[in-house]
Length: 458
Image 1 (cartoon, rainbow, N blue to C red):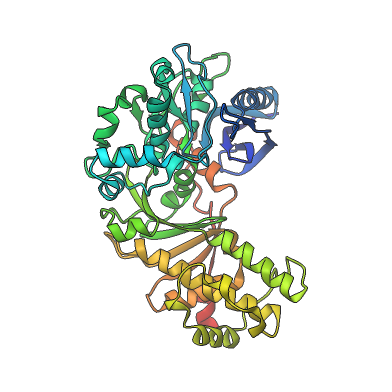
Image 2: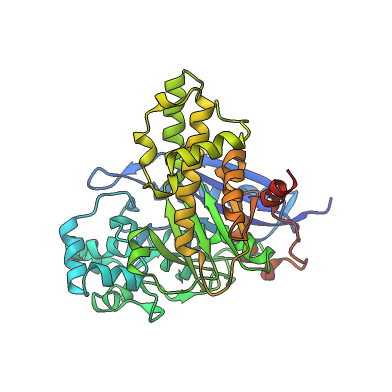
């Protein structure tokens, strides 16, 4: 039996660790998932178990190499950001992988800002909202100031995607998709490490930067395959869209967070944008991508549960609901929602609604307006945008999608619900296409539904 040529992609999430095999048409032909139990760092804060992660990577890779159905031609990785693995001179982890949710000492943070031009200038130059440990560069600064002996002992710091690649290749590299994403390391004006990174000695602890599409050789040579150096997950999820659509577009990736990404907006961040949770990503081709974040999925989950509890409904009551336009637009006129702030709906008295469905319409009217406010922060870029794709949880919410399409129709923006099987892993696979796959990239790796066209036909 002829073996199926595949690329293996490890998708390392904070909760689930997965491996996927994609065939030459980028169809998933194998997958495996596990959850690893967290351990605690020296301060008792939960963190990733690097030993168990290493064993998962090796075990999963050995499993697919032993599977006679597949011929593994390439391996790549995507992983969550803001996480650094500190290696000693032997290439072994020197410390736990500190959790990006771990509280950061305010005094230490403020001292860094003060030394390098103040918080506003620092954050604007690095395109990094002030996020404490989520700014991974500040994790290194904390180590430098609180544990100078350990900092000196550290040979190199790798972001998590590059560490997982290092386990297979033994090669040390930094990748722009990780360096460029709210790390406070990168100066977007100079397109180089910020001067604080050099002056504090952090640059000497970071591996050489390479493009996210390079191919490396593995440590073990009994199998003939090449290895990528890994990508930041949010940047990886954008790749299928960049390769599938020629016209300028914006992608709204939805889940707990809703992240609007405009690859065609490279204008420097303003103070207002920064204060409203805008930042830059870097694509795997080292091109800036302006993004705006809003905690939309979290708000939806909290408020839909509040509605369900109030009306004595099951928490999934809203699934399958369809839009009642006259009711929804009446609610919008009643609320003047475009003038309210995010978080408003928590204060709404649910007694004003006669049914759970009516309250849920109101919630979606509110969420759509909040989403558009966030979207508008990054919409006007170097090229006009006429297409908007929504993937993730909200793309399956028919009420939300119809309301969004109706709102953006006035701006001549067509709205599409997009469906990509495992977009993050697929993006990491596509980044390696030229190195392992002689076929053309399939034209329909993304399924789309045109909500603007559907509205026009009604």
